Image (cartoon, rainbow, N blue to C red; front, side, top):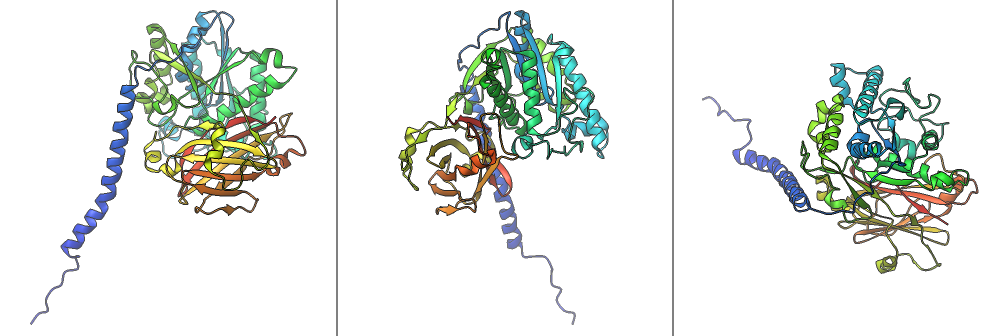
Amino acid sequence: MPGRRTSSRPPLFVLRWLLVGLSLPCVYFGGAGASFFWRQRAAYASAASVRLPALPAPGPHERLLVFAPHCDDETLGCGGLMQQTLEAGGAVRTVMLTNGDGFRSAVVRQARTLRIGPQDYIRFAALRQDESHTALAGLGVTSKDVLFLGYPDRGLAALWNDHWSPNEPYASVFTGRDRSPYADTFDRSARYCGQDLLADIKSTLRAFRPTLVTVTHPSDDHSDHAAAAAFVTRAVSELQSDPKEAGWASQIRLRYYLVHRGDWPLPQGMHPDAPLLPPVEMRNLDTRWELLTLTPRQTERKARSIALYTSQIEIAHEFLSAFARRTEFFGTLPEMRLPVLERGAIAPGADLLTWAKLPPVLLDPARDTVLRDMQGGGDIRSLYACREGETLHLRLDTRQPISGRFVYQFRLRAFGPNGETAASSFHIALQPDRETSASPQGVRCSAQGRSLIAEVPWSLLSHPLAGAEVRTLAIGVTTILSGAEVDRTGERFLQCR
């Protein structure tokens, strides 16, 4: 009698539970994403009529210097301001920090092959330079007033944090070069390092002597944009504190524009009659925003110039065209000093009320991406800092309680009176477990609810300056979950005297 045939398939109820198990994450993340985007659009719709102070109209003596991390950022953020400055009889110059040669999908499209190498990126950069000349000519900016510094795309943060010295230059992951390979470069001898980039920025400032300088905002989500803000802010500060340069440099007004932040701008696409406004989450923080109103002709002209960046429009038309609207906006940040407290003012594990008397170093937007919305323990809200004797105290606040699942990384770069600084930023990576812990370098941290408090020996900042006094401290924070960045602030500068 033949044996009974047994099926190798699992029982039906197992398959059902497996299907349920697989579908639950999809339902959860899909629901969370839908809820986030619905809330974002509702918030933007309700705030569309917000009123901001007007940016003073440029006059005939205005000298506008626009710094752009990549070719096209200058037109997206300042296309109307450049037109109005020139129409008023003023002067305009633009400086591209990189040529935007690291945009892989655009390079693949241009080369028409998936197998691309360094020469493809270099050829693509030449195309982007040509697009810049054409687009800016459409706004009235002459070719002689379009400068290219030639630093590495997607590498500016590395120059600020890890490659300050020309003795250890950064090599572009796209071109493989450690200096600009482009003929049209401001200084062909400059190495890919923070020191040379800062020097080039200062040289362009000296040559043009602007009255108004614009650069991307420190809170821009793109790492190159945030780093560009750090370099330009530091360059302006150094010139203004130099007795030989202060006469003209003290007249510089520094303004920040925005290109990348969360789901902004909304709605995307062509809406020339709508205003371009700061993201809802950034409107009432530490940036003072001012609005520039464009005429319909200026908006149309800006839209045409954006469209001339063909290599970018082909990939991100809806996003780029959203910047051609009837307004532009620019922000200023307050000058900050590092508070110095008496010894014992902040004891280890002190109540958070002790910090209530101190102003925040920065306020960061919250819940402006799906990831930050879902991971509140890594969503940065604010940062505080003060010095007590030989200790730097830091307090980081997040939207939800501090969690050991996250790595909280502080970035600190100290500058001496003559610009002395270390070869690398000082990084502190903390992963608290709710108990007071100590790092090998003597940094202590503790978590109290939604606050992470760290104590840093001042000598760790001052020692690399070879005896020079710390005059300025640049500070930023990144939160990381399983190797992925959740949130990151730009660098903010604290005067230490």
